[in-house]
Image (cartoon, rainbow, N blue to C red; front, top):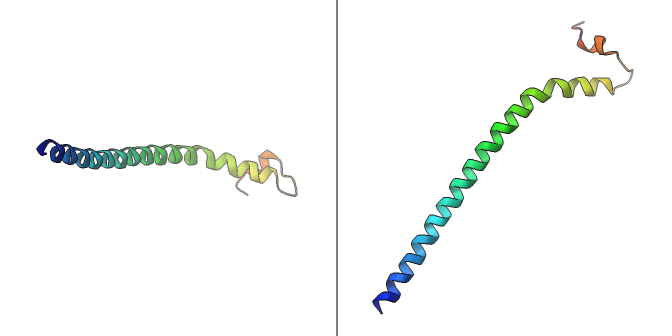
Length: 69
């Protein structure tokens, strides 16, 4: 009878550690994803603005897009 009680306790403890492990992996994944998103946004914002500007009407030349005036 005692062996059954101890095995039930182990199951609950393992389940709790599994939930902690899942939470930890979700936190690691979200941190990794946010770092990658920051880099993509940093290097992709200006080219995105240039592409949007090149596809607008009237069609500007690249030098007109890059000049501050």
